Image (cartoon, rainbow, N blue to C red; front, side, top):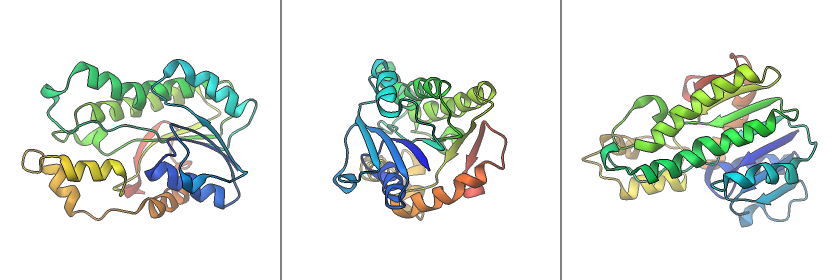
Length: 228
């Protein structure tokens, strides 16, 4: 298989890339950096890119993929931002999060329309539908990502697209929430702390097993892996 992944520097993206390269698959990755755990694999094709640089994405994809036909593209890269009330969140903060979580993926999807990509899975979040206090721009961005995937599904009939909430995972993002967010002000943080969370490697294995099941649903759907 030929698999494209964004955001392999840590957490779920790193674990997914590790899973696939060790299985002998050809992995193509865009990320801010290549972690030590993924260095030295001949079947990992990597271009360094900060996806906030929207104007550079198309060229980086062309450099990385050229005419490569993809079996699977995983749009994993994302940013959380600070947990706080929406009224305390500046337009600048919202713009930064939307650029990475939504608009970078739009540019990627536009590039996919020009080549063969059998399946696209965009990593979303339960925050996209929960509306829990504190998620502010992150929740907005993931809700917008869900709709972005639905809209592109109508334009890409030869590609199956899904926005997938991966469940609770022990990532740097989760660690930041649990260490720094106000648990009294934002009750969801207390619930997260008390919930069972998967290690990234276990989550990657669970997700990889689920990707085939996603094809049974209509293209463009938002799916929470915990409901599969």
